[in-house]
Length: 605
Image (tube, rainbow, N blue to C red; front, side):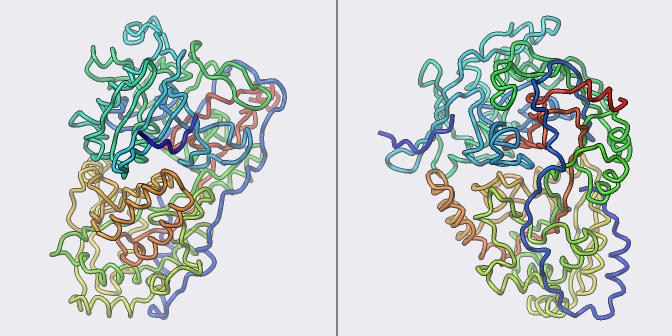
């Protein structure tokens, strides 16, 4: 018998000024205390809603831009989507558009969220999480939606092979097994090796059951239901993979029609798409409204912004707060909304190796006290962001788990670590056996070089000789994915949706780049994971309590964040600056919007 638990149908930085400031401080030993910049800030509303209350319009081409070429076409390699795959394929469940600004406005969809009440079934019309009576194992039961068909392009060999047939539970099981049972798959090697032993069973004509240990049931839900995009079984059977653009056959709102490496990707409407508009003036309409979506690959930021200014593209994301002010001044017709915050990626360290300085907590704490995060946030980011950003920054949807520096519950010992105090840092280093400091290598990419030149200078004042090993992206990615480094490494902090599994604090996957294996953290992570299945609010409270210990350990040297903005032209209707409609930075929003071409013409474009 089982107990049913729930059901759910960095950009380059201008560093010269702060570098000079850091070098020329009159009194470098004076502590600098965090004040107002550490207070949580939440995204504001868009400058203008930009929503047309009249009937939606069919037709038109939405032109977007991305800075990166498409590297992977197969979930086998990445575990997620991409600029095109998010619109050509679908996940088992994903974000509910009707809960965002277009509907009830319960969620801003400005970043990657994994909050149950903001989600809905896509390929799976119903999802049940269950815990078995013994409590050690649980199941996820996906009821596969009937009437969902693969797209059909008769001029594409792979698509013609599938023939526009209905997706089945067998497709889902074959895909999930490929992701978790095949050596070399992203989910097998990197995403979550704990899923190796997951069991996949067809338990009904339209039902797929996944059985996993209870401690990872929510992570399994993310990795299997929210990340991976379901493929057609016969395409994989025939070709062995779907690693080229011509093999993209999914159930999404668009069909990939053309791709030119380094230039563009063109998608056309899937006339066989099953979803309806869930809310607003077009409620009940067939989706999508657009005839085409075209992505232009523009790696240069100034070129991207020029394309937006001249309406060569309809929308652009990740515009810095400095550039946003100029854009608003020069092109007042554009609409704007915050689309998340970003921080220079923090420093992870090999604290697991006993022969490295970082094994000693006093060294890790000294490194943090030797980093003047308050001055960086003030002078580099104009007091626009937050300082405490690892392992979580503040988001309203996850506010109950965030322990801020100005929170009354924050231990004083942690507050003191965030006060710039090089004299105390020197003492900690001496106590740890490094009275003259030490030399350490930091692996990073060119994007972080300016920022970490500042940190290099700051740390030199306490005797830490930081050697910057700037790698090109391919070499860096290999080191990062394999956790193959000796001292220090810059890497990403996951989105808030990594909670509650906290993969940066456990396991052998790449997010745990500091190789954390702490009995207290392991035990509390298990408790948080089990609790979150039935009581997310209580699990968040447990996480906040855990942070009192985690932050004192200083497994990572954080970096302050700063806001980025999305700009778009007002002829994009039913759009409010949404970024990710769900868990994994997906680009789903074009399937719900329409274009007011008459407005565009009247504006001279």
